[in-house]
Length: 326
Image (cartoon, rainbow, N blue to C red; front, top):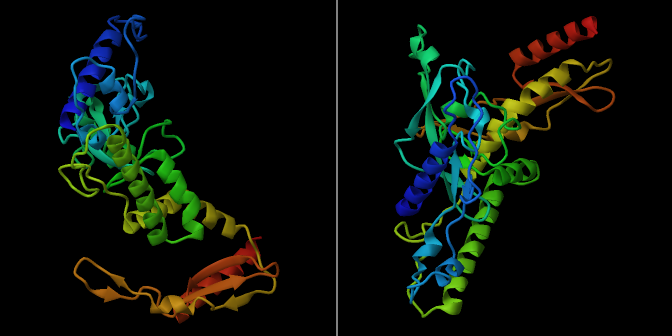
């Protein structure tokens, strides 16, 4: 895998040197000769067909099926990323080479991928006082670079990055669509089955036309290294999506609803049994008394809160003020 990543890096560096503008006034990139193939930013590993069409190869080992696709985050393919994510300036930024931590793991629907990116250095943030809090050097494969980006503004093809991992855009969209009608464990199991299906396809492709040889087990870290997204990560992805997009929209919509004759519904008392466990294995209940919902005449939820006496009074006081203002 490292050799495969090194070859992709050398190819991208070659194209970058050929296309970098050498003009002092205009920033228009130079053109590439028609003799040079322009590939990327998503690089698929070579298949057995490529090996058979090359001379001098009498046997093919299954190692080629262990290679993971590479998604390259580079200004060669995404010139709009030449911008500091902190101060949003593009005049004093420079590229400081590839990330020193290597490839970033990316969860996919059928198989795992990796992402490679450059490091962006902002001289404006470096010279500004108080810049030590957020820093001035950002890796394009880190959450620090993408935390201020809305998911719908991220260019097509770039994975969605989180603190713990990254997801392909297809897997991210799938989780957002399925999570409201399913559970995190069910989605994670379905993704795992799709990964196992792809693993069996790789195994069949090798055994179909080649002498029998030991094909790596699915979870062998030195071989196929198969893994899939966990149910915990599925929940984290959806909660992050809700907090960044749906929560503020829902709160604004609730403030536009009014009520003349409201009803208080405590059908969510089962939430009182839910407990959370912290990193020290200490359990606590945050929803004491369950969840109380206030419904209007059209059966719309106009407010909700934990069913404690203090919060009930606060909710009713807020509804009274809302009715007076509306």
